[in-house]
Image 1 (tube, one colour):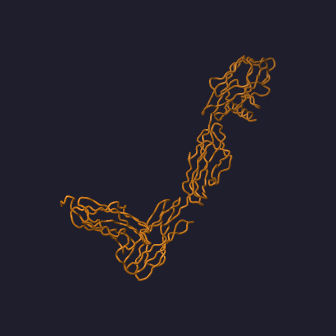
Image 2: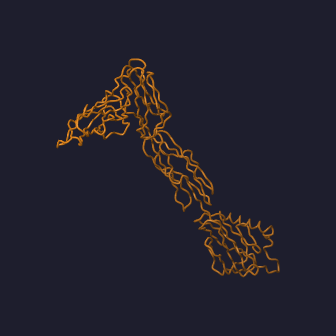
Image 3: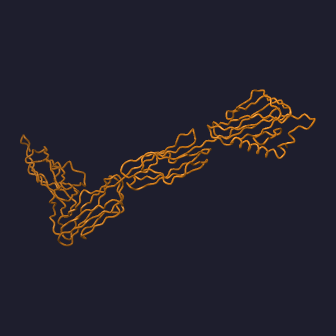
Length: 485
């Protein structure tokens, strides 16, 4: 039925081109009495017959997809009253058009008889294609009949953006993120997409997909929305697959990746104990926060409740803390009255995460000026007698036996200790010394002369009321083994 309709359209188009006189009336098909009619060929569709005596017909296949085939039928009719002999049927050079069901030549066409020729069009490339069909016969009026064959090779070309990977990145567990995939036909022919499938993790779903099957004309475009909702931590992957009716094209695929993330905010201590702080003075301790989870966390605010003697410094909100990152703040204790002070520092984080709280405590009173919680082992070093020009080394250990962390900001010997006393293996400053932890130093004695030498190694800390702690160093230089000074 499709071939029949196309031939009807071809016949009607040719009639319009030739004018109202192109189709002879039924009475004109019969030869007048006493006259020998001229032998003529005609090209006809199923319902219409066209006289080809003065015009060249065009058989236009229109757009046909590259790699596929289309067929049309040419009807040759002997309108004369005597038989006509077909001598040859030939196509001009080219591969797009073919003749099928050809009769053995020469072929005799009886009066009013019809010969049907099937013409095939199978484009191998895109673009306009044309060939010529030539028919020769013994018809004295039209010994050469020419038919122009035309067609357009078209091919769809689907382009997906992004072309390879749809990357969602880290998404909070239980939350959703939506990205778009754009599908465009950049080819010359239409293409039909029967379905779009998501294969892989169920965390990826199509959000409001169009109705399939969907036909996409050249330059046509549509958008797919993909929603990623991880319900747990870890990596998720899936494949977005688009099939189409182009037999020469592979199904298009877009990889989809995402990470289920859950932040966790932690601090190394639950309580900050400022100890006894003299009234009117201040003590400062540093708060360390670390995100030990798998996704960014957002610190929206921090609040200190309780005694007004406590205050937070060095904090700017809101603050994004990536996975594995650490940040620090300072809490100051400034008592204005004697007695115990209590407070609570609370950090407000993302929705769905519990606030993080730290207890604050201190005692308003006096201070000693030295840090009693930092304990030296040994408490003093006496190198004894050491021959001048030689060296001796001892190991010092300082331990934080308190309940609050200490920040060591400086390690120094007395101003006139060098070169008799030197300290090595010093840590990178500032150095965080947690409760119960230790740090070691090496101290070397190198007497440059004879006699007694004395110095001290001093640590400076972050405690404003107990800013330092020291260990004394002594030794005696002696003469050489030969008695020389």
